[in-house]
Length: 173
Image (cartoon, rainbow, N blue to C red; front, side, top):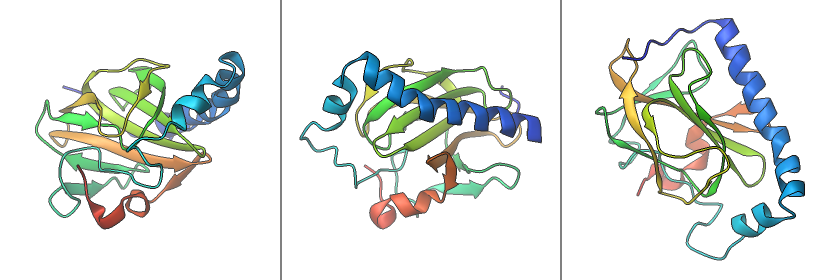
């Protein structure tokens, strides 16, 4: 069981990690001589203006709880449920190094957008992996306090955003 410990130090640690992930993009692009941009700009069904919910269901069918002490949502789901990438991007963090978020994945999408997936039972991707929209990247874990569920957050240019703004028709796959 994962225990959620929510205090200002945990949130500062997450903020530092997210800021670092945002600044790493330029270094990655330079090191890989543009391969990242080419991969993100491929013409396919993963349009960048179309995001999906990280769990297979529509927003009206999901049990979504706003985390008062955090910046994101707790999406209640059965432990082991696949967690999906909301759109294509690059994994900039995959690990359990931030206390209070369990196994955590951060995906960078085009346009300085980050999606954050916490309380995972298992992470199925590693730092540097390219992911496609709808690709399973983890499985839902147990939060330890509120049962099984996914912690989910979206950030734009390092600032927390309302996730509902990114999902057309509040739909999923």
